[in-house]
Image 1 (tube, rainbow, N blue to C red):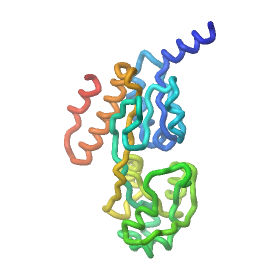
Image 2: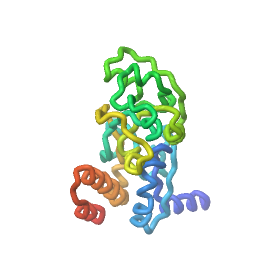
Image 3: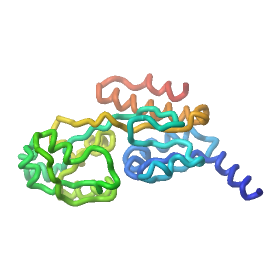
Length: 235
């Protein structure tokens, strides 16, 4: 009973956020300090897993999940839609300018870097090639367990990848990767902040912060000022 009570008190004093490793690395961690400053009365903990079932555990307060927003028993706030486009390193594009708005035949001459299909249900190279008119494309190329590893190979100029909006935005802004087409493909699915409805009061400040970050990103894309968006976090 004493150990159970100690564990219960520790859980109350901790706010746990769950997401995939790639979302944690590319999207959540740039916002980690703002979340930590908001949650001053609880220790902030981030866990990563590609199996969302792990995020149903009682000690996970908030998770960022990919899907359609429907998780029975949970509230879900839309963060951003899935949107992707082909990318490569600036050096590779400089050597092969034909990659810009390339045809299927041209794309297939280069290594197409992929995520292992068992671990990722989102948009893939096959979707892009099909959108360009290829029928039942068979995609061959190096495969990686997570997107961060894939990006290391991409940055070395050894292949092409599908770039996911919001995940590679900073890399694009920094000039570490370049888009090969202005044309994007979308699945209709996206990333959501997911939490138990019963925990809404405690989690809402963090959700508002993430939503404000989402709105600020959209405002920057449109060239609008973002000062007013900050008020939503305090609300």
